[in-house]
Length: 320
Length: 299
Image (tube, rainbow over all chains, first blue to last red; front, side):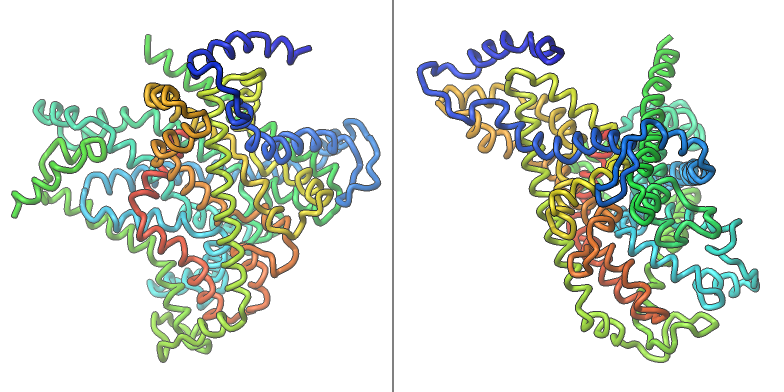
């Protein structure tokens, strides 16, 4: 029913498109002339590995299924009711949000500062890109194992030795002390991924018309004023974009925690995705894991839907 | 001297560096020197972990845990590298990663480009509905699908196969969206002329549209390759046999077997990190532009 109504206007458009597209009317149509042929390969994979799991996952979340696909019974919303009452869902959701809050601020600010430096200096661009962006190209496994072996071993780890070199021997359990574990993961993440934001900012800086600066300079505006009144306002859209991309990326944290702390100490760093993994893949409760996934999905959807609304309102206010 | 510098900056394409093209090269004022020092310090901080990895990998195993820190061991040796290489696993994972990333990239570029062309240049019953489904899919993070996707892989018998790793990474709706936006800007007149000459849609697509879109296709390809090469969660879930693991998954899996042999750990990390860094050294410009392009158009 719905599909007929949705498709109703297309036949008209179709004949119009064809008349315009192919003047040789008598020629027999080859199969490759049909638009669906172009979309089919993508859509087949898309339907099988995105749309179908999205639907079947919703179904699974209503069952008591285990990972082998057997023993599933329809339990209605029981899994969701259990998840809402499960303190581990809330603590891992909180860890996820806390990581997102802690990581987004430095990732955006440091990204902006690095881009401003590189843009302002206009020399040895390859060096800045190599040192600040190249870590982004390393697999998470490489980055996390590097930091794990650099900061975890006390005494001879690089972190402790650097502190020792300036006369401090704080004996910090970088990844084993609840107070520092999350911060260590945040620091690793900043080192690894800030280059992406750096590049987005650099691209935006290079797109600011030079005549704005020239005019400001003629008016006697100093470097500080030019930054405050031209550069930063011109970057507002980019900042909005970078913040959203960053929040969405940070919410999906899994690799760093899994590799560096395994969620510890005492589950203080375990994110929601790791809880899904534990329930579904090591605890075999894949129905329950699906329900938790959908709660996480709801969180991500809220973030990605709220942002455009906010930026639209801001744009409207600016237009007034 | 300064004259030639000005000439080179001026001749740089305006769209690429408007700031430079528009003005003269700034002089080395005191403020600018301070900025340079800050930038160099930050560069040093960023390169430090990498330098430490390389330094440790070149030490004899016995020197890696010595304090106080020294950057060079009692001698420089490639022992750790040859040990890691001889164990053979790393080579297998490199090949697996390369195969999976190349196949995923090829399939993604071809299927997404075809789909984007279909959505922008052809018409058929249900086109709007299908495009709506693709746009909605941009909102779905693949991470929330791990449980149902894994069960599907069990049912299809694709666990521990290359296809099990590749297929879920191929249909990326955001890439279709990027390509649709690009194709919408390609003037139709170029195609009309070919139609008049009797070419069909298929030929127009391959001989006119694809060559015209090389920059944006390169951006999509680069982005897909990097994210596939570095993907951890999905390959980690769908491979259990060490012989079928990708590089990141294999490395994490093997950390326990290396135990506390730091030189070997660092040597394997250096080997594992190398490929994309080498690619980056050669294709800096394209990669940077690709990231900026797909990153900005991603929303």
